[in-house]
Length: 188
Length: 110
Image 1 (cartoon, chains in turn purple, blue):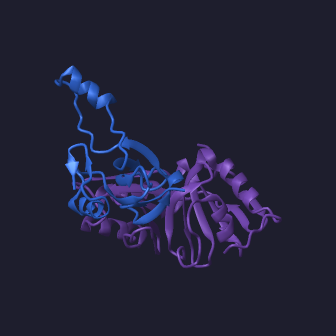
Image 2 (cartoon, rainbow over the protein chains, first blue to last red):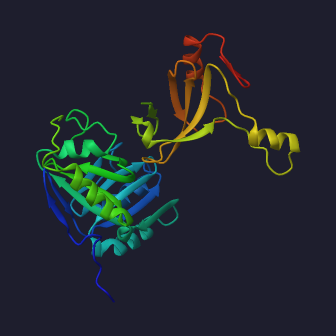
Image 3 (cartoon, helix red, strand yellow):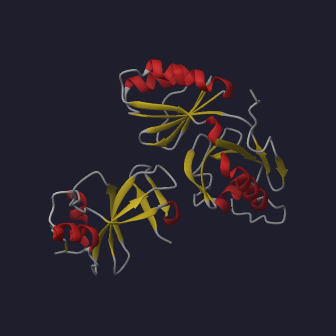
């Protein structure tokens, strides 16, 4: 069996911000009634996180849960554990209407950190990144230039981006161009 | 730039995050319907000057369908609501009546 590798094998770029491909991440799409006790306790048991509020990400001791739509969560777990977590969800949610799928290998993950992180993101997504509108723990599903992406901000002010693996190189190149040292705008 | 409120994400999202889905509140005529009904269902669309209802999908976001009530003359947006209904909810009708008294659109009126 070959070893799993991430989309860009941890590529890095330093410009206005530091762009990093963050390697393999375990990701599970969970769909169902997010208000139901069954989903709430299942999410709690596998990630340690509560079901997140609208456009938020909730962190737990074993992972995180992010709000994707009114009936969909993205669970972030350890890559090696993803299949085991899906099995655990299948067991916990038997008899309820739900879907849990391991999508880890369909995705690429990036981080954007540094003073100008808001500005670099703001060049690519049609989202208001001012501190009043987008802060730590906020999660948005949108687009970066021409491809769909989801992103959130952590407590240190860095952005984490999730996109399809097939557009991983495009995403890295985009972030590279947007963080060119001579392209500072100084909006945020 | 057109910005619409996604009722599912509770956020004003820009047009490039959305996909236009054409006229809203169409009644489907499928197998068993007459040729005329099927023809109208496929091809006959409103082209109003004034109040209009259109489907939008938050495709680069939650992926859900919603309906926007707009004015084709001023491009004013009266409001948006989830698409899982067969006619405009009363609150949006009231809101349109406030600004465009006596409006009608297909079989709906204020």
